[in-house]
Length: 499
Image (cartoon, rainbow, N blue to C red):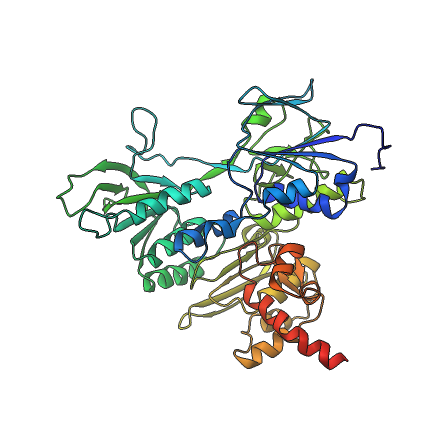
């Protein structure tokens, strides 16, 4: 896009949403100096500055303060000439008038519109979950936002009249990535925690049955009980004196779990109400083409959890960040398009390590072959799906020492020799040897899978703060933090050696 004349009005870009995808889009636009010729307005319906949702469980666990989750402070937006409006809930979009209406009646005009509305939780069909007035039962908590996290923290921290913890037990409904993170965080706080998962094993959409069993065993060792192949069907109050339980959650297996808290992490769907109201084509998500533009209206784009590309929605941060980079390029007239290639997920929970690349089930159906190494004694299960010599999917449980190299081959679609996939599944050295391996990583080796940051970009930084500010490494799932620190600590020695 060419620069506007000084006296010409700048094109108006309105971004609906202030989550991680929207924040990355704005960062990419700033990096391209697009705000010099583009008038950018960001509308966030929460009252707080954009933050890292992945680390909400770390706040619940107590390892991070809420303010540490902030991605960009409001002053950063102001410094770059961006109009950030918090607490600005959008009521509707008028595509003919090209404006957005807020709930307070304010109209915001646009030339280009980006919908980054994310996803919304869907309530499981549990009787008694919702009361007659439409509110959730007071013992039930959602876990999607910082406000949800704070409410759950308050409930966990509540004390009885004698000062002892009031809420000692919790049931987490859902054994996906979020459910495991929440369960681990509650367990770390001393809450007796149980997970209920309707699938036959934990993370059943991402990992194999054998890996799911290992994960369940690890959780049990950490004090979290796991119920798989079971669905919660009814919630009802119990008398305070009955086993100390405040509520009882009945499962379809016949078991009843007495608990103080119920946390919902199962089920979520793309937030598409605005798009539907505006007459855009919506299936599961807002249908977009390779330019991440609505197939109904080319002046409207969508990215992140709410977007559906090539019949697929993502629900993970790395694909959303990839989309943000591509869309920023498209808005700046770069010759780029989105091919939906980057599917990466990482579990962020203390003492639990899981990484997922690609869609293993789909790749196996397309003729992929499995290369697998498991060590139940150490709690590790590593699996690659290889097709035509290329890694097309991977699941790693319990040992992520090779995740960076595997991700690099996955992204580049490197053609591997027959013996190489097996070698990739062997664990890295530990201790001083591991430090040496990290220090000798080539500059093009990927270190941060969430943000796609290489070792070379880390080495170009002088501090962890600079790494976070300029590359966004460590601000996603946080799994790369130790490697980043090792690279930074080895940097002076490398510089001295070179001189």
